[in-house]
Length: 310
Image 1 (cartoon, rainbow, N blue to C red):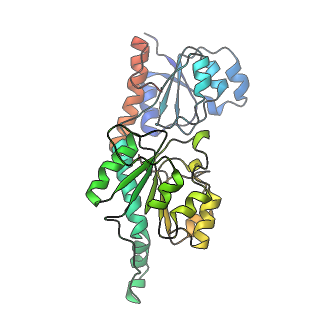
Image 2 (image 1 turned 60 degrees about the vertical axis):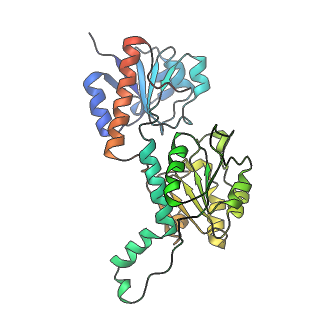
Image 3 (image 1 turned 135 degrees about the vertical axis):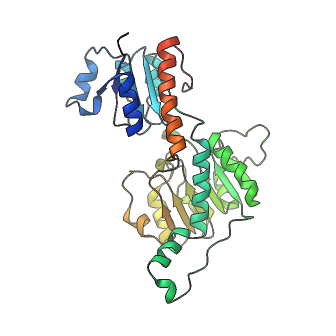
């Protein structure tokens, strides 16, 4: 049988790229000089493949009308899902397979930020330990953990909190059945928390959810940890809080304009910055690649997706 043709919205990880090329004919949309005209023309594509970071706007959804878009990643804020529904586009993503590695990294950020692990590493390497002792960090065990967004990843982070003897409360659209500690007021949660960890979805609904008021409530002894999306945090307010000493520190894996990061956040002594690597393990990457391919094969064989986006 002839191989299906897929419209590739943007660059993909090397492993996924090669595996898809073995099975399908791919056409790189991002190399088209006139993207809008190309999408508007009748095209013989059987579906499309993308990543969470690449925008799939109304023009893409219209071009894929009645077909499939397989997304590498969990986040859907850059996918126009309302347009997908209007044009009957079947959209999949890759949930669950990255949950545990992202939760692990969240705890890595908590420890690295509170105990200043990257700073201590640089201190030893620079030879400063010969001249003076390194400063004091902040204890993690027994502190209060506030989680914003108790979905799959937030729940995995919460499970790990028991090992650190940390009481937990959480904020979201509604309380979770069987999980106590729901706090409907985000400012109240920030006031209670020693660590405020963001694991919610991005998009317009959570844009700048963490603003100056929330950061002020978290206070000079509090730490902000973000493994959600950069858009959730007002980075100007974050920089001001750090500059004025009204926030204890921040551990960040995501940013508003990544890979761009403000020089202030990069240079601040109480900020740990990571390159959006929460899901970047060999095991998770392989599982995500396999799920993209499995979704496409399932759709082309049966018309059904294994992990459709709700």
